[in-house]
Image (cartoon, rainbow, N blue to C red):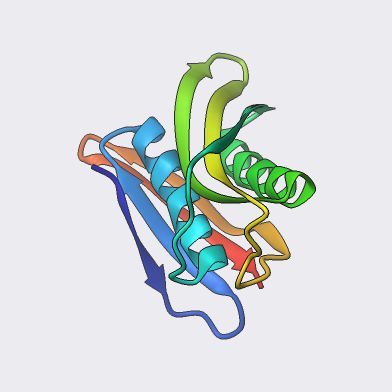
Length: 137
């Protein structure tokens, strides 16, 4: 089971998510972002939507995916609680398809302005995958 931890940062929110594979690490990174936005509040999972992202490398795929989740949640007015990676493909580029679950009409407690490319890292090893992301709040 993937997890995440928050790291010290002067102004924004920096976290590291990990999992046994890329799928699990991306899901953990999404959970970390959702926990920042909800700030400890409970969020249901009755509303859902699907996203598809493509990028030239893993760091951008993660940043694009989290950014898309953030913008779709704002546009659809859904506070997110969970993200499941359904498809993951590697080739000349990287692509991901996933389904996000949340609660319609629930207001965010913390405003995340952006998922930044600054400090974004994806490290794969035999032990698993670590993702580092900086959120602009």
